[in-house]
Length: 163
Length: 446
Image 1 (tube, rainbow over the protein chains, first blue to last red):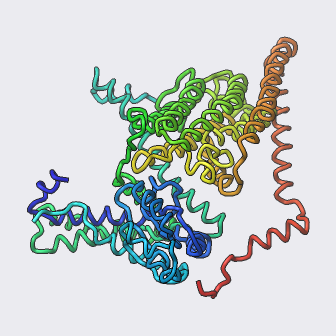
Image 2 (cartoon, chains in turn cyan, orange):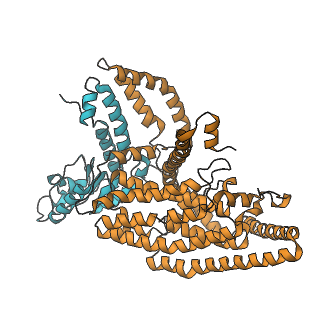
């Protein structure tokens, strides 16, 4: 990136143009990791199935983290599971995003007050881009969350100008 | 039809530049065109899958939201006061292109909604981080995708695209294809071994077993085709089926029944070859090396970004190659461009996966005996033909075989017509009605 930054020092317009193209390609092919632990997982599955069909937006499930761009943490994460979630997140290649789906992944949900084993929010372990409330959220809510994430990706810059 | 080398000579290019150009240009054209088709076929695959699963499939990534959005941003940026020369130039170009993009969007979003999805996927995969895990065998890990892609792309060199368009016409064309496409297993084994991951290794091993086994029925089908056509050159096989030989007569002149598939032995071998080709491409129902439910994703489990994209491209190129061989061997070569790839996709999204033992049983106990029987039958037939030619003469023999073939073709085509027009049983009728019913009732909230 250093060379490009130097080259475009007085003309950051080209950088923005390139960014737009790259962001468009990233947001139009968000491959998500097949990862679900609880009832949110059922909603996640049906979001990918015929009726809600996230393939319309270019989203397909990948079974290995190496080929995924998006991790949808769907369901209750226990303390024991959290290290595995972190491992999976670390195995994903950059650029990567995380959607925290449902109350459990957001803040521990119904287990928030008395559970000895449930993690109070996955954002204690991995960075979360979009939180989706609900117990569990309906597929429409997940698709809305994906659109929020796409808006976020659209504002990203790869070729950052110094100063 | 002059070759490119002769054409270059006539345009005044001689010596080594002509040598280099005559080799490099056709290769580049073929690779670029075929890889574009490969990219497009990933989109087609997703649409076919969506249709079979009664979904819509990718429909958002059109020309307008993709290139149109890019052009609009470029124009907007070019108008800003701190835009330099290159920014303004880009804005001017994009502004001129906008009406064209809008028109293209209007047409393509109707014809092929979401068609740019493969461009988005490709660009994104190039941008992704290229992870090479610490525990891998690094040189092998890096090289494996290229070996797999090279073996698939290498076969493109001898495919006949038309009587004038081909890169090379070897006299050992079929042999070359059989040799170079089986190199794929080497790359897959390299990937499986070098990943240092037990799932990848299992996937690689399964793939090796599968491809090596299914090479045998493929080889038998190719050998029988060679016996019938009397040549190993891909162009020669096509000419043989089109009757474009010196001294051809009206009854041996490119009619449908001159296709090899209407030779009874080849008629049996066509499904054998097609099944074996499916297995060589690692496609469902033979995608045991990549079985998600058992092996996560098989030999490319540790591959990310561009290296995974290369595996992906190799798989689709292999599909194109095997379909092209099947068309050349059975369906009259370039005289018909039949979409066997669509058939492969249809099978993939319809059938579940075999178990390993079922897959091996199908190959060794069913396909290979059938293949050997057809091969031997053709050998015997060729001897009988030779004896008959001495008895009744070449011309009479040609006429007799013509009528035999025409009768066989007539029976096959008649059966096909009957099959599609047969009276339906009540069960079939009920199934048709079920299929015709829309999955989402109109007016229902989604």
